[in-house]
Amino acid sequence: MELDYTLRLAPWWMRFDSFFGDRARYVRVKHDGDEKLIATGSAGAADGAWWASTTCGGRPAVHVVSMPHPYNEFAPTRERAAFHAYVTDIAHRRGCTLDAFPSKADFRE
Image (cartoon, rainbow, N blue to C red; front, side):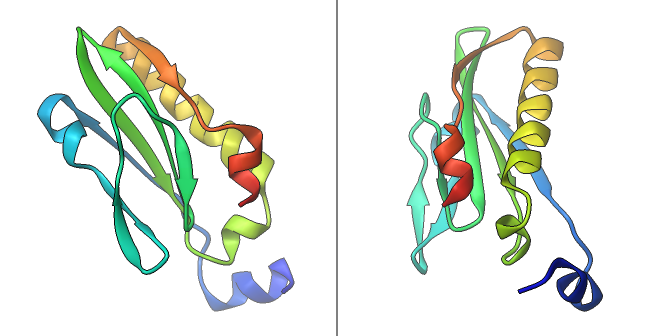
């Protein structure tokens, strides 16, 4: 599939979300047609979503970026850079420490 053709069908977008404290324990992403509960302190990828974990004031936080198929096939290095910038920024602003970030291989799923 070509990027030009895909861009004519739908706009390119990425969604960034962060969940802190108790809400971080209930974050789910779609995975193989079902939902997968994300473990706090983990990082990974599933069906066009990637997540990272931080600790903020001793409490867990989960950060998620999602992008619809087929856009996630076109720019894995840009997705990773954008997500890393988001997580780094929010962690800095909230005084969080990074616990886990998806590997380069996770962005090529």
